[in-house]
Picture 1 (cartoon, rainbow, N blue to C red):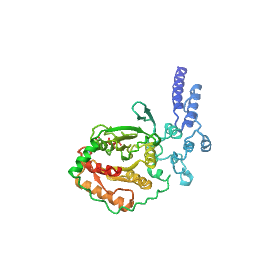
Picture 2: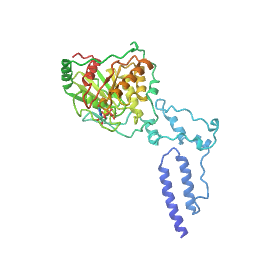
Picture 3: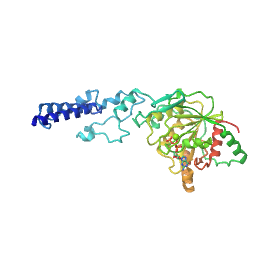
Length: 384
Ligand SMILES: Nc1nc2c(ncn2[C@@H]2O[C@H](COP(=O)(O)OP(=O)(O)OP(=O)(O)O)[C@@H](O)[C@H]2O)c(=O)[nH]1
Ligand SMILES: [Mg+2]
């Protein structure tokens, strides 16, 4: 009977140990040692708890290339996490193994073996292209926030671009759209708007030779809905109540005169490769005339919006802030957000690149759309 139990135990341990081997976790080396020890114990038929498994000591561990600490070192400089070197426990005055543990991260942030593989071997977003439709379909295999590249970090890669424009001192009042202007604007934007392409990389972009304006903002702020409202269509651009729906750069041609770019959102759930794609587009796209930075009326400027403003200022890309979803906010709330945004831009960052007209719009109720159309045409230098 004892023999039977020990055989069953040995098999169970073998299977579990084999499963453990297949896990390519950062602690695979330790797990492998533990597994080998358990199998040996089980095969002998002895107690599984008698002999302690031997873990490599710190010196051995650091000399082994399979251990996690050496893994980030294999990344190239642009993908490196830019983490601070790990402080030794001694210098911190802590000696226990537990104290050396890095702070716990959310599952999305935790580096996985997939994360290592992708970041060390693949650049840019993961995507496959559909030849027939010219659409690029994003795949979800890339890790989220693999190493937390922020716009601020990307901005450090580049020396500041000299900006000749003078400091913005005050924001301009919004001019009413006259009825004749309204008709002209509506007729121009009613002409067929068509999807041109989706892209991940700047070198995949077609040279349309048309002026381009881009729409960016945090996930779910209403970028895609606003493009639909501008071109008077309901489903030219796909929208969703789930944040992170737009994953690629999507280009739409309007009345053969200009191109609108729908961009992926940043903020919560934004992936590093998206940030790099956004950054590269702003840095290298010469057809880009203005970036419309969308901010939710109710939330005002968040940290990630401020980071992006820093990037646009540094790259000297003209941008204009648009407050969205005005139908959801009270007038007082909209007024407060406007004041906060204006004072941040004028006093705090002393903007030069910001176009000093602060619109609030509602894609759902079609409010402020003609004013925005006028700004788009002005940016593209198109006369009515
Ligand atoms: N109340 C209201 N809801 C809006 C408005 N604009 C968009 N929405 C809603 O907000 C949600 C997100 O809209 P999207 O246009 O997909 O937002 P997005 O910024 O493109 O989002 P991502 O592509 O995920 O970054 C959808 O459920 C829209 O219906 C608006 O003006 N008012
Ligand atoms: Mg979208």
